[in-house]
Length: 65
Image 1 (cartoon, one colour):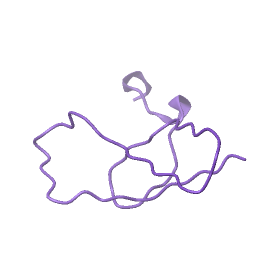
Image 2: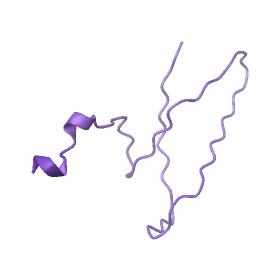
Image 3: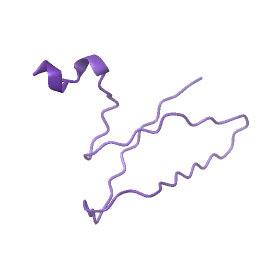
Image 4: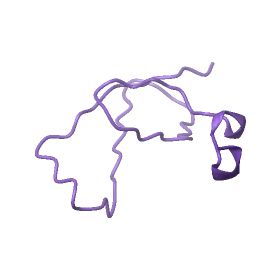
């Protein structure tokens, strides 16, 4: 069974002049057996996780005007 879990975590003390050097994700699993695979970590601005990623056909390119 695959389950999508998308908690929202909001950073505090934002300094927009700096860039992210690294991100650490810690997963704790208890009372279970088996394998855990983490794929596709999406980072986006704002306080609400949308789960949406635009398709290239939805992006307006410079030559489109």
